[in-house]
Structures are given as C-alpha cells and as structure tokens.
Length: 256
Image (cartoon, rainbow, N blue to C red):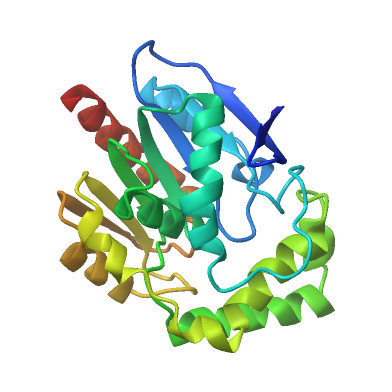
C-alpha cells in the first residue's frame, strides 16, 4: 500500500505490475468498499490478464483521508469529474480500462461519458444509472443493520472512519433529493466497448439498469447475467467474472 496526494487529499492505493506498454486496469470500488475490501480479487485479475492494475480507496473510505460533513446527491459526479481526474494525473494513468463496481461503475460512466477522461473500455459490475425502489429498500435495510447488528464492527476493519464511510453513502442515497438521481445523459458519450455484469439476485438493482445502458451507450455493448449471484459478482461468481473480465480486457488491449 502507498499514498498519493490528489486534489489536496491523501489517498491510499496499490499498484500491481504487468506487461510494459499495456493499458492499466483501474478498480473503482462500491459505495461501502475500499482497497482492502476487494480482498485478493485485484491480484487474481492482474494474474488472469497480465495487465498492470491499480486499486485505491476514494476519499472517505479505507485509509484515505476522511470526508468532513455529509455528502450531497452529486457525490459520484464530484468523484468522476474532479477527484478521479486528479488522481489519474497524479499517477500518470493515461491508458486505462476502468473496472467499476456499483457506485464505482456509475463513477466510471460519468467520467468517460462526460469527457472528463478516456478509457479503452469499461467493465461495470452492478451499475446504477438511475434510482430504483429496490435500491432504496436495500439501502434502508442496510442502515437498520448498521445500527442494530455487528455490521458496523465488521466494516470498521476496512475503514478508518467507519461512520463517515457508511453514513456518507447511506444518507446521500436516502435523501429526498437523490430520488431524481439519473446519469442517462452521460451514456451517449460512452463510445468505448462496455461489458456489464449483473447478478440475477442483485438486491440493489434490476435488469432495467443494463437495459438502459445498452440503449444509451454508443460503443459495443455486452452483458453477462450470472445466476445465484447478488450485488457483488466478483465475490459470488469469482471464476465466471475473472474469465469474462480477462477475455474482455485481452480483446480491448490487443485492439489498441
């Protein structure tokens, strides 16, 4: 683990070397994720692809600097349009394939679709492009679990400021202004290839998210639906996800 200053804030990151001259896989974690919460998946993905890889914790997560005060409804926009571009400049991440999970997938879509940054391709696990009732119901249930079960204690192993990490995500999604959150306007700006991966039992979103993606992006689109799989395909169906990501990344890197 190392630290970099990006946008005036200290962020933890880890780099895994790969083939010289190849694009770098950049992992963007979910709304309660962090560098450590990917567990050993980054190492397995780097080994499966042979590509260099970077994984980091956004501000407010893991061992990165905390966020003071509540996050607004545009916190993913702020990350995609300001913070992530600054990280890319600081670490020289010019040629990338973005691998985003949940919030991270939405950040990748805004980042590329807005023109704030480019990518060879996008791999999106459980992406959100608009708010669904199932998302809000599960996020409300997560708040109850955080307050009444050992969820807070378990998350504290991965976040220096566990209350800030959880409440920043949870309260933003459950705020009244978030009901109208929608990033479909950015989809036509996505002209690179996209692989979208969704679990059939995802408790935070439905196939409507992938349908919107397929109808909105302008680049080649492929989807992978996985049975017996919830909101974290790389954990629930690791082998299938590694195979699909490796095939996609090899094809994209070879085409460059």
